[in-house]
Amino acid sequence: MRPLAAILCAALIAIAGSASVACDLPSNAAALMADAGRAVNTERENGGVKALRRDARLDRAAQRHACWMSSSQRFSHEGAGRSQPFDRIASAGYTARLSSENIAHGQGSAAEVVKDWMTSGGHRSNIMRADAVDYGVGVALLRSRPVWVMLYAAQ
Image (cartoon, rainbow, N blue to C red):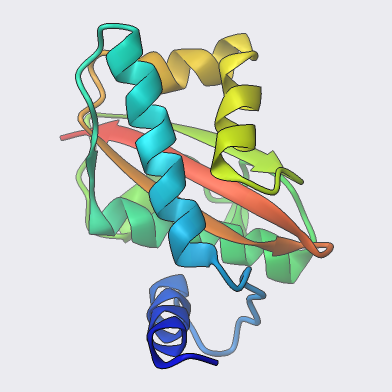
């Protein structure tokens, strides 16, 4: 493994939380997450909505949930301990006055996942939510395919 890739993988595992939780990550996880943020902001800007800022606390919450889905072999907005997105965001230290979450499974690229979200009314609404300010993104492997988590929030 190249040194930069090893550092990024170690950082993602640290973000995911406890070492006791196994989390399989795509080899290009950091690039996938960065690409997802860019793709969402492109959609927002094309729709006349201000771009979102990436927030490390929201990244941490999203990555923890992606890893939980990977390790538990479940695909759900309800997470560890029956947590909901708002709970996971608060646990990561982000005090949200509003929040929403998109999840997806199986898309191999950020362009593909954002395209799928944009064709779904509820997911599209989350992406285009004008009162959202920040975002966080996580990705892991569930049954050998990427599982995506994207959080949108404002304080």
